[in-house]
Length: 360
Image (cartoon, rainbow, N blue to C red; front, side, top):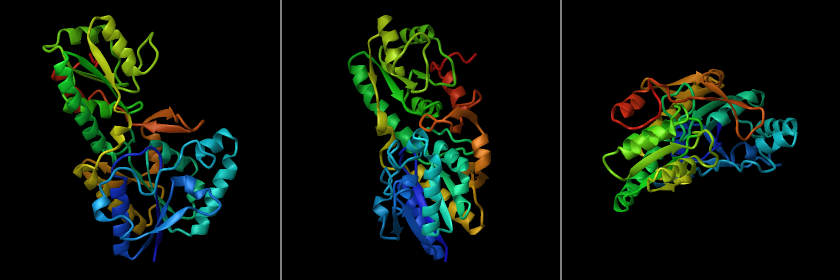
């Protein structure tokens, strides 16, 4: 009988509970025991490992679609986290405690559900997991993990952001006003692009494409309406300006005589009941993770590629995108997947007359 662990790490998103439920269900069908590690890697650095036995009663099916994680993702920056260990110079002691507690639990395999930072960190400290099988499942609303066409949580975040913009459009029309909506996404513009097209935005500004604020102003002034939505990704920069991206753009519009307000959906994008698309993806990736364990794979990540679920090496994931410095853990390089210029949705947005920057 195999004994497997599961934990969620990094930023929150919808779909985590669906993945956990499907892992527990699938493991039960295989006759395996499942244990949940509370607070991610933080839960493995307490004096006694913070784990719970998971069974079919741990997460009732009706709660499966809920946002968040019943296992919690940890508290970044607290005394028993990777970030704090790096900043305090105690990383060797931290990783030693992690490996010791994993050995104490005596797991055969560990499923880590995380984003690109968590996956990069797992690879960087892979010796911790040398005595068991490590399987990663990609989740993030940013859609910035290389080698997978979709991540758990992205579709729900698109839905949340689109609904947010839908509601704003009504009040925008009532007051002849433009709303500058700042979306999450870090250095990837995929969330902004997808929700912007779905929500009928007149302009979408993303980190991957340079834009001219003067051209944006011209575009808004020449619009057929005097109201609408402008989505800006949190990762954009505006030369000569400082502050939050939405505020920078808003000030430029105001200076040009364009009535506008800013709006920040913030963590609403990480919330909301999991969409059917994300539930299906979570189910498929949970199954793939369990199959990987059965096939004695390790240091792999489940991935959706060309409509099929497969596994790819974590080393390939870490080296498969654009390198970037992790914002929370000094010295850790992560790999970003970004919006390509030949992205069909980007091309469609441009052809539909949405201002997306200087693409030509």
